[in-house]
Image (tube, rainbow, N blue to C red; front, side):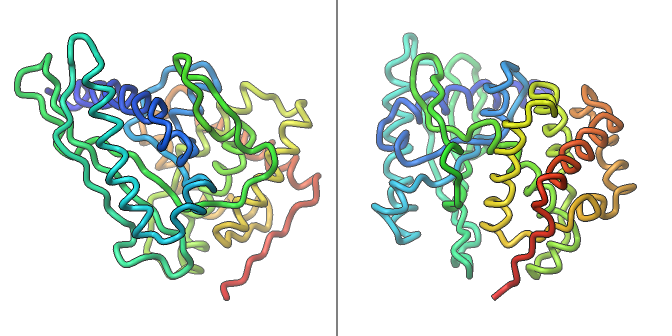
Length: 291
């Protein structure tokens, strides 16, 4: 199986994994889903996604405040959800090989920003010899501060799932891009990271669907951006913060063929348009000193 075929296969199997998770009530109540898969659902698009992104829901954090207890919960519930879902299918297409829950960082985050990477091995019974051993990933990030309308219920094939609202995704995309830039990496004592240019691409996609004239939407996105930055101590002086090493961002954006449907010029214009509106809302500067 070549790389393109493998990525299509992983995306397809993750669709099934996502459905299995939301049909399993303990996990449905424990996780809030976000990221590319949820953005696609909001926008009515079917673009490929090679992982599942989520955050711990307040219910899981309250019931299991200890990170080890949270890991144990996920280790117990995810295999149960997947086996039940796969075994109900006719014919049975997939077989669960195993689930591994890795904590990131392994010894816990000094500020409690713990993340879990759930690595899932699945055997495809319709393709002889195809085994995705620990290649499928479900990421679970630490609880974050959310606005009153940040989470909504979205039905996926008739099953309700707790997901980030589109305006929360917009705010988080802006925050996520800043966390990949050198200033934030130095502030938090981290190493260099590839610029998250895909977040620029996604901001442009959201702006296509929700034009800047939709003032109420972008006002809510601005408030979620503030909360998202506060949750991870991300400073922002306005557009100048986003423009850090901008020529390099352009090189990396244009080198990624998966972003070609949104030209860099459009992504740049979208970013400047959205940040300009946030500037009019007088939310800058944002400063969160490291304690």
